[in-house]
Length: 507
Ligand SMILES: Cc1ncc(COP(=O)(O)O)c(C=O)c1O
Image (cartoon, rainbow, N blue to C red; front, top):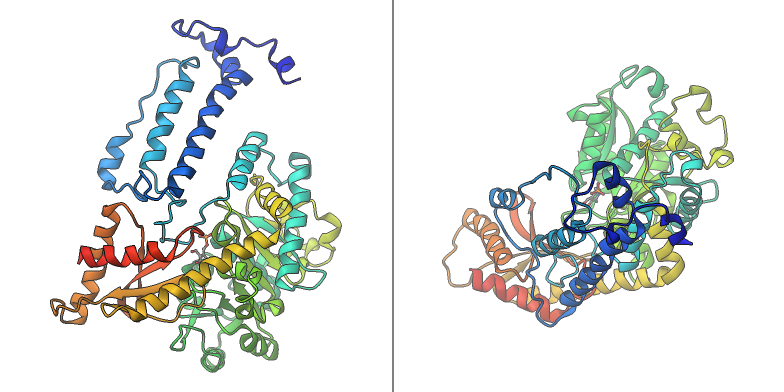
């Protein structure tokens, strides 16, 4: 069957490779199925070899092949051929691919302990190839019939997992930052007290939300995009574990209200980016309920811990949220980007982009669930659901639960290791798979706070250049710390002991 489609087209493989392609042939050759096979087969082999290398006792590739940005730019001059040379492309592409793989950061390497980006499940990566080839967006049903149906099921699973009631719903969108803006647009429309979508943000008192001091910048960014300015995100102090303080939340709300600000809601972090702290959702939900505030839970990183039996208690209260953001490209091992933005009442999601005011909460979006463009920022939207749907359908949530549990348990053991080490200091007890610490040399060479702060980034840079590990850093209470997110399920205690030795050697 597949060959029947290509019988009428000139095949790249049949052509004399030295004969230049005529331009009118080149398009047909570029789409030739055999050309596709010639391109694809080495890709799979190379990626399989990359996965194998990452699992080797000593991977041959550095986790982050450090090259200064300017030199990297020089490494990749874009030479444009005068004419398409399709016949030579498989070999040229393969050579390019080899260099891409060599020069990139390797998230499958157990030495990757950096940012909150997942080592991707191979199945999910293959789904990306299928989704990209089909290029079925989901803005209008006809352009993505399967994609739309899969998205509906995936969103239902997310809502059920979070404990949201029937009548809840949402969409998949392009990342946690955009999802947060989507959720806060809905919150604004629901709680501002006037039709902000029609009359703008300034047709009443100044609007604000309350966020923890440790919240991800996406909440502040969303507020500024909505035109509320710097004062639109009011910071609530945190406790010693970097969790939002409920008493401080009440005080901040009272203080803002007294100033004439209309606070429409609270953004609770579950968890924070810097230390992985889970705000006390139940206490915050009580306050929101008593005061008529919208509760938004930023679960971009932490919502996945709902799948870990021993860790889901940290999210108690999430089922009371009005909206939730949940990144699958963080702790569900999916390729970036795929984020679920969920609403306790699905109609609020539709109101976020109420282009037609008559649509506003009047209709039941469940009746038109296939009209995704009306509920998402994106017009052309990627086929995002396939990878998550396939992951759930093929492996079940148990695999994801095992992943989050394994990485969080590893973090607990790493914290013990750090507490036991005389020359390291743990910033705070980890609440999930994020561990923050610093090296404090015991030889007395680093005497004051400023010197200790300056030391950490230098050590980090050296460790990165060593090629075995990729840790990151953060600022906490004005001080500089090293930070690891244990994203890789194959990172072991031995790797982490070696990481500490790498810091010692760098010092
Ligand atoms: C807590 C939290 N919220 C939101 C985001 C933003 O998500 P994204 O990077 O998908 O835009 C991040 C990213 O690290 C995060 O850690």
